[in-house]
Structure formats: C-alpha cells, structure tokens
Image (cartoon, rainbow, N blue to C red):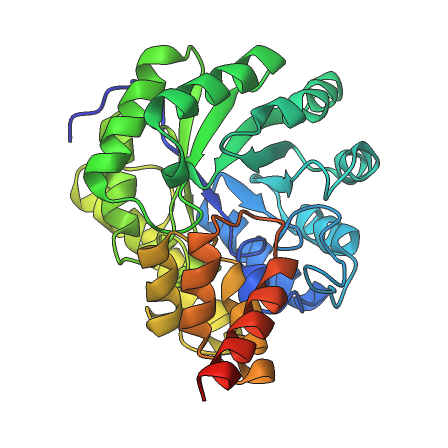
Length: 342
C-alpha cells in the first residue's frame, strides 16, 4: 500500500465514547474497566472515554449518564498500562473545568470538536490543553457538509491555535471514498500537522473510506470494536486491523486479541446488533449527525411518526450536533401535518 506519509498509523478506539450513544450512556465502571484493559493489552494506541457528546454531555438534552464520566475515565486510566486514555470535548457542552479534571485523572489526549464551520470556538480549549501538556487534536464534525475550501480554512485555524492534528470527521457517515480522498488530500497539502479521519458506517463504506484516508496521508485513525458507535457505528476496529494487515501494514495491534474482545466482551453488552438498518441508512443518505438516531426513534414512537421522515426533515434543515432538541419539534410538526392531511 502506497501512503502519502511516513509517520506511523495510530489507532484510537472510540467504542467507550461514540459507543455511549448506542448504550444510551449507560456504561458501568465494570464494563469500561474490562474493555479498556483488554484494548490496552491488545496494543491499541488510544482509548477514548466520555459521554457520547463528550465531556459535560450528561444532560437532559443529550441523555443522562448512568455513571459520572470522570469515574469512567478514572477506571479506564487505572486499567491501562501502555495505551493513552483520550477524551472528546465540544466547546459549549464541555468546559475548561471538565478538561482540567480529566487531565488530573490521567487523560493524555483530548480531541476538541466543533462543527466543520465553527473552528474558531476551539481556540481557548486547544490552547489550555496544550498548556496542561496534553496531546491535542482538532475534530471537525460533519465534514461532508462544507466545501473543501472551507474545511481547509477551518483546519488551518485549529492548527494556528496549537492542534497537533486535525481530523476530518464524517459524523453522518455520508462521505464516499472519492470525497474522502479529495478532502484528506487538500488537508495534507495545506497543513504541517498530522491528519486524522473518523468514519461512520451508515453507507457501509467506513473501512473503505478509512483506507482511502490513509492512502492520502491520514495517520490518526478511529475505529470502534464491533461497530459500537452512533448510527451503524464507526469503522469496525478489528476489521480495519485485519484489512491493514492484509495490505502489509502492521500497526502493532494484536488482531486475534481484538477479535476476542469484540466477540467475548463487547458483543454480549450490545443492546442490539450493530448493523446498517433503515434508520442509520437514512442518516447516511440524508447527511444527518449519527447520534440523532435514538432521539429520532424515541420521538417517532412518541408522536406516531416514521423516524425516517424525522431524520430526512432534520437533514433538510441542516441540523448539526448539539441540536438534538430540534428533533422533538420536527416530530411534533410532522405529526400535526399528518392530522391535517387525514
């Protein structure tokens, strides 16, 4: 495999953060300890732990956590001997206070996440994380929803604030391989820092998109064991490791151990099979934020509306992460429209 970077590939497994959406944010200390310890033993480089919407996300709007995320972070740090525990922070959801607390507990990497057009709100958090001595990455969400030029512009802002890498984040699982190639190539040509890629599998191309990103120079790569992530999940980590191995790229992660963790530890706690079903497929098709799925399904049941119609309408309104409250309004409006038609 020919790559446009000579830096090593580093894997971040996000099942204990992105997977929180699937678990309705009900992870227990025991589950986090067991999964984090097993991922560490398998050689995964970074293990991300937080509420699905990042630090401070445990709210009525986003969903309450069963266990305070700081206790989950502390458990993960205690279970890891070699991997770095990472976390996610969305400015406006998480604050500098939570960032500092996470750092004190042993978090080594923070990804500061903003909508793809709003990188300017990340300046304070990136700067303070660097002052704390943490690794810091920018995380541009909904990367499909802005022109390439805007993506590059916003990534350069994060670089100027001190980010050591910037991620193209396909939050909706809407990007196709050619679109990933175009975006990662533009970032690689425009930035002096590392490029990362975070995929969702709503259109069944998460692994293909990730390989494309690596070919174009991405070196920070995300996956989730057993596809335990929002929507249809992320690039399935154990599958990704197997594909990279077949392509002659040994990233230092034990494939058999990853298979065993996925099958024996993560599999039994899944609320349902992580496959591409009609809801997640519509999200990729409509370009809707992947964490909206459970909210749309609940609203659909409450108002007697097809969740697919809710997701399509939310997509038409170009909703972004953080606007989960819009889902209830859309569902209520659609229900009223149905009554009028009847």
